[in-house]
Amino acid sequence: MRKKMHNYLPQCRTEIRRGAIASLPVLFGLIPFGLLLGTQAVQKGLSVEALALMTGLNFGGGSEFAAIALWSSTPQMLTIVLVSILVNSRHLVMGASLTPYIRHLPRRKALPALFLMCDESWAISIADARRRQVSGEAEYLSLAFYLGLASSMWIIWVGSTVAGALIGPLLGDITRFGFDMAFPAVFFVLLKGMWKGVYAALPWLVSLISAGVTWHFVPGAAYVPVGAFSGIVTILFLHRKPV
Image (cartoon, rainbow, N blue to C red; front, side, top):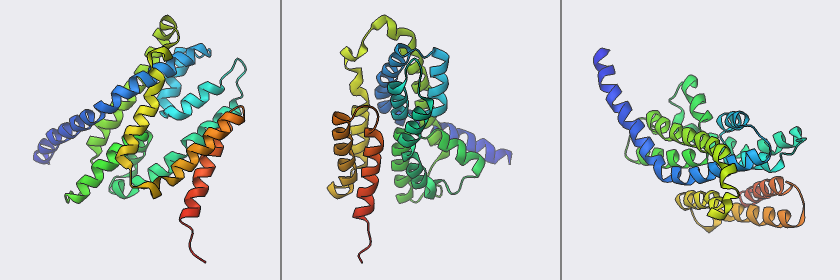
């Protein structure tokens, strides 16, 4: 038993290090993204403590930006919660897609792993799990790799949002530095890695156009549910069974 543990620990450390290294390209996009969110949050009146709590427990950049956009001196909490749930609903599909790769894990390990899941950690870990599957690895998803990957992103995300809240007021409007381009830049990097052809991307395109048109003509956050539901309807239409 002691010999087995002696061999396991160095391998675990190696996998954690490999996951942390794999996260580095994405971290460079998360930092300006987090700084921007932190700056916007304090401008809307959130305290640094409240922001750290939100980013640490939610860990979903899109929904957090939506929540900050809807925040006011008398916030409509029900609207913010519903929009956040809707934006984060994609995690249901993402988590389901991870199931074949984490089936070997006990629930006490699988659930904390899913808590740390975000778009970037999901995309990178799925790609690594598929590579391990092709190479014949017994466990497709390396939990230590995933831990190094996802925890690095979580720490940098919370830290950068807090840093944005602290230094944002000193910098003023940081969008003039181009920080607002961080989110679409990271998205396009992930999109490239997941690209499977034009047909598979049609639901994304329909969702994008629907949300854009709604944002232009309808005030408020209606573009969020419109974009989500139009994408879902497109998926159902493309995969409908012939009568």
